[in-house]
Image (cartoon, rainbow, N blue to C red; front, side, top):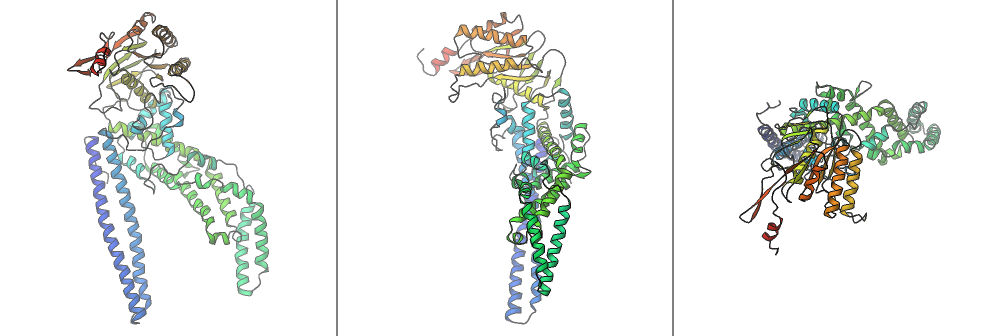
Length: 600
């Protein structure tokens, strides 16, 4: 029975965690009792064996009784252990959910850098991947397909129609806690994201047929039957000629098909690994009713010729087990007489002909569903985060009470950021540590969330479709022999090129051109910002060099000065991280140097 939805996500998660932990305790008690019962049955079997074999007072057939009981108890015990494992994993799901809600989630899942993020103009700047990243906060995918799909959504802006479809899907999935739990604990292995290699599986499934003559399949079956019959004749009459003749024909066929059989079986150890997890995920999705058009369309992709994808994958899993059994010594001895490899290869080929073209759709559907469930979980766990509103017209970004989703709620300072109308860019001045970079990252990461179809960390966000181009974390490269300044201007060139495309660019330029002298910096900064604005881009530029605040004269009123200020009280720097209009009016650099002991 599903639990009723509690008043808050925290309460619901705690109730479910406690219920699953109680289930674990119940099965643990059963586990101990069944272990003791199995021990008693072994003792009983030893006693009956002694009584029947040594005392000769009891028939040895009585040994079947404890043996049968032991098998039955062992089978039941295995089911109990399986249920206990599922309950333990379910409890862990809600512990991790509570950690996300309470901002204790960093490091709870293993995250690595993604090669597809290296070419991005914002992934590193906005902490999209790696430890403590947006991806770690969002992703609850069990498969590589789900991870790749979610990463693709974060790395590429999508049309508004696709985004609104995701909004409807996420809204429908938001309270489907049972579905998210089942997807999280499906499969036999506790370790996440094992097996299921989508590229290898897709390549295998769509590989051209190697065994095109279907008559060979029935010939192989007939020869196997004749081989068995010949072996029986040999055993009964001693006449071995029929068997040997059949064996010669079988050997000739097997040898002639050797290369093609190897191509059929090549790579199956990787391509067809852990199909049970894929079958389990497909089966769970097939049972779930959906109403939004996007989810219904995904569910339609889960069949092949009216056969549910989970059943087709389960059939393929059986074929894989037969393929793997070819390494068994007994099977090797009888491989040729039974035409075993030939028949299994034909079975694999038949599966590919029937369902190979549907594998891509299944993998895509699972990946998209896992990405949607990740966004739905985030939406459920952060009910105050709304979906953004997309507007038409000139490039616009207007956010009220905008915050950074990776900063704990208790520490997150929110600001209103508006780039619309005549204002095409904000020039934010302020000292180091005043929060300029964090504010820019807040704007960027919420734009990424908006363009991926996710909720945003703001009271409200209205924007036109935008793509982000950021120059926040730009470093020199010892391997490439480039300085920080060269790396920065190379990045700026890429952002300017991107601004010529659609949708418009939201540029985020932190401490623009700080690697050169002040004269060149002002000249270059004015030119870069002018080029971006003239291309239709909007954005934010930050600086602690007050000379750059005069850039507004070259911006024809399109550049608005804002600032973040700081105070020194009782010998300590204090920041409120609040965005204010105008140029910063004070500089505490010299005083800060004196505070740490420099003689200036």
